[in-house]
Length: 158
Image (tube, rainbow, N blue to C red):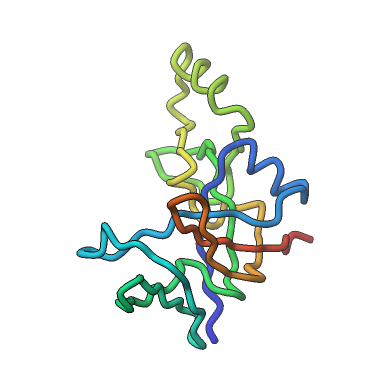
């Protein structure tokens, strides 16, 4: 099986907990396929290929594959500054992390430096990642009326 590398978003609090090792799993809401929005799931069956079958009361079912699979490598997406050289060319190895985005953004509005560019976490390039995880388990849990993917992971940082 091929190892996949993907970015994953966390809140600032969860980024800190994941980096320190206090947090080792995350939940993401399962989104039903189009046409199944009102589906009421009664039980879930894991399949051999990493997918899950969601079964309704009337024996109707569909299969979904979670975004992340066991063995995938995830890198934590974080807000960063990317430093640019002359002529606006991005310098791939020069960037800085923003530990407190709210405070930094206030400073940015006061004094903007044209040689630095703020990038939100969702736009962080893979080469800037400093925290990596490996997915060690995937399961599905029901919480109240919603189903969620539960991804268990461990740090692969040195």
